[in-house]
Image (cartoon, rainbow, N blue to C red; front, top):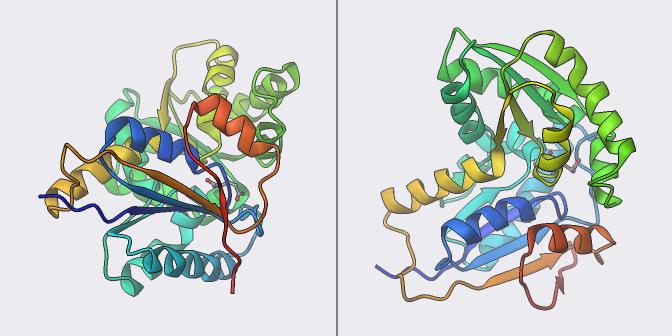
Amino acid sequence: MNNTRPIGVFDSGIGGLTVVKALRDLLPNENISYLGDTARVPYGPKSPETVQRYAIELAEMLMKDDAKALVVACNTVSSVALPTLTKKFPVPVIGVIEPGARAAVSATRNLHVGVIGTRGTIRSGAYEKALRAANSNVRVSSQACPLLVPLIEEGLLNDEITDRMILRYLEPLLKADIDTLVLGCTHYPLLAGAIGRVLKRQIMVVDSAQNCARAIENMLDEQSLRAAPMNNGQLRVALTDAADNFLNVARDALQLQFGEIEIRALS
Ligand code: DGL
């Protein structure tokens, strides 16, 4: 089996590169075509209808690259558009929410899970639904953290102001006695160090990027879609508008190698 068609990965912007990093580490033979909608980021504050429309446009662009699967490397999109995308496209569609929810349910001991994400993700209730589907006894405490994405994009990954914001957002969850925290936004793995610093007690942190990569591996095996072990996987990155400083932040933090960025205009 040697299916060298690319895995199409998309996000509202550059944050989805955390999923690409996890994918590159786990599946180095796979070709990846990444598309970030830098022209219209952020999606977090937008309505579900708008996010669904944007998601369809991005998926269509990746299908033109002959994607063998679509990976929604964005929690906000995954929380509102997965059924629409699954119905519309003839390839497997994997999001970040279900894999993260399943990992959280396996990790929690006291059955109380905290979730942080954008306003759109938290408002959708998608994590509660997925967590309860995995274990109906689980309690969920959620917190929208709208200021974390801009702090990450400014590169303030190790900064007192970011630590203070994290603490402020996490305090209610810690008081409610969660023992597991889902990082429900593709930007947040870049804050893993800061979150570890701020958490005073032992909390299991579930990173949706890593768990999504494992779900993709299982799907490729189940559907016999893997590239052969001798294939040297290539990563192509395209954006819908010029990248800002966040691309350098992400590239440095993730140690990802990719060539020139292609700019693909939205039609
Ligand atoms: N990529 C988005 C997510 O994972 C965060 C950035 C945005 O608001 O578009 O939810």
